[in-house]
Amino acid sequence: MTTTVDLEQETNPWQAQAARFDLAAHKLKLDEGLWKVLRSPSREIIVHIPVQMDDGHLEVFTGFRVQHSIARGPAKGGLRYAPDVNLDEVRALASWMTWKCAVVDIPFGGAKGGIICDPHKMSRGELERMTRRYTAELFEFIGPEKDVPAPDVNTDEQIMAWMMDTYSMHLRQTCTAVVTGKPVNIGGSRGRREATGRGVLMVCDQAIKKLRLNRDSTRVIIQGFGNVGSNAARLMAEAGYKVIGILEVGGGLYKKDGIDMEALWEFRQRNGSIHGFPGAESRDPDELLLADCDILIPAATENVITSQNADRVKCKILAEGANGPTTAAADDILSEKKVFVIPDILANAGGVTTSYFEWVQDRQGYFWKESEVNERLGDIMVAAFDHVVRYSETHGVNNRIAAYMLAIDRVAYTIRQRGIYA
Ligand code: GLU
Image: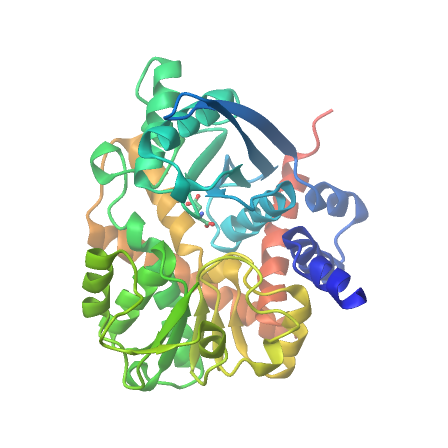
């Protein structure tokens, strides 16, 4: 009974965020007032949106937008569609965006949105109407200088296009910079689609350099094959890493010498799923998560590595492609095992960094080549990695707490400079 309650606490993303925040703020000796300011989100919006379903009946969906901080710039962060979205999760994800943008030092605060729905059971028309009504409800609260949404779990370029269009219709002028992650022909950035996966590759490159490993002998297991996992897998295989395992809900794939990623990618395009791919053995996903490898990349959702399995994880490097895949209780276990953790607010920051480039390009009305986008992304990811690792070494804390300390310090500094209004 107690264990169930504890695990519930442990896997509450808001608690997971708060535990790390408190520890980092304590180490920073953050003053009590700023502690209070940064511990809670600055604005939480809840909307109940009516949507006409295809069969004619009306459904009401609950949606959230949480703006955690606008100290360093407009709030920034994705929008997710899932049946288990809840306010605590969106709150945590919003604050992670604040810390993430500060770690990579881009001029944004943090926000997140979510709608409780099952997008896989909805038609395209239903999704469009729900997205448009949600955007309309938030019209006053979002905008290029206020809060800039982007894709997250189960949302994509098409959804961003509908959001941009709805916002523009209300404004009575086209405004592309209101959301990022749009299709390239309507204000999207080249390289944005692959950016989170590419950022994961970039930080893994830095980590293996530090641990004196080579790409071609580095075995990688990836959990999740959505936007982040599939792009990370493809780019890492292309760069010479041995991607030996991919696991998803309902099944996993394993091949000792490395899975042919191009073949798997094509198989998934044709069949809509990775299951049944003939080029690898099928494996139990829970077993694969704990299999021997050099780099483990959780790239799906929260709470994958917990106090229940952290002691059995066998990787040397944990690169968090997802937001919040590791609970706070698991942090200590991983530290003891000397796993080199590249925390989510650093490892998956390639997405929002390229969103920043998209926002800049939209405001300039001038679009960059993909090579230019990737090069600038590399500069930012490498600098942020070095900064976090150096901070961790000088302050004697693990990489996650170092990243939080760095981020909190930057945000707190700005708040002190701006001062508190009235
Ligand atoms: N949803 C992504 C994240 O969690 C991207 C956010 C953005 O591009 O604003 O970082």
